[in-house]
Length: 260
Image 1 (cartoon, rainbow, N blue to C red):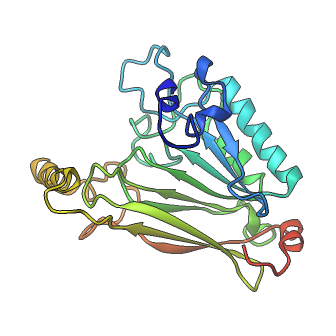
Image 2: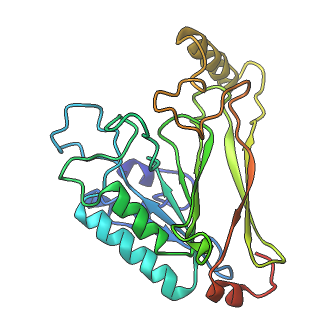
């Protein structure tokens, strides 16, 4: 975290200037545009190095400090009338048939919250529109449907995962968020192919990405040990979509007819 303060670009700290980097607390939140009621909650949901786990420390995990912080950020966003996005490394509810896998939510008692309780908390904040994550090196999307889709559809939210630029097809992702005429929100999420100049390090990286996929026999995008139905097979590993989010009545009234 401290290395992000050694930089020639702004902001110094690249987000960690908003939190207590000296004590290793890597969670922070920010409002991208002051005139738009949208807050991004950056959540460190990875295991601690000293948790005693014998595996790769790759599960989803919140200690009590991070869990209490997240609940307060969500509650504050409700009070402020803000739409909310959670940006985390590890996605949620992706294990399915493989409990305790290295991509899932840690079931150790050290975890301050179980996965069902976490999802319940998130669905109790209807201003939450999306959880974005990486970790699995997949481009995929999952719907968290409201527990009461008829009477309270606004309690649903989306999860969007994006693969690493290290891996083929080496795409970044953009998010465009719109207020629709029916007072719903559209999230247009698109995988983008960066331009690569011949002879550049980026071009060399692309050859390595293709070779790595060939060496592991194919298709990390066909690799689906948890039988997750949101993981789509190749040919290209991309996953683009327009996602619709219902808004609670309070946010519909606040946003009015202004574009967002």
